[in-house]
Image (cartoon, rainbow, N blue to C red; front, side, top):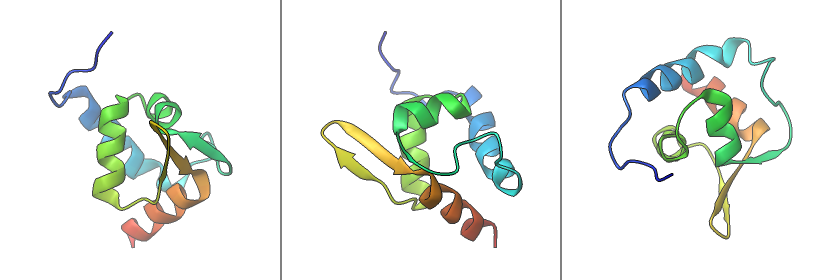
Length: 84
């Protein structure tokens, strides 16, 4: 299965979801480091679009080989700052 290069319209919902769950993220990991693949699955979006979200939001991440790793605390801290 290959990912499309086109923006997937259903991912707009996932982008909105990420923005709206900042106030109550309890069902999502609060600590630990996870690959962009895991984060994308949690939010029901493609990995490509999650990586785009990282770039747009300025969420810190690091590359480990071909994987992009995001720390849960960094993710939520950044989302909280974006809301203010």
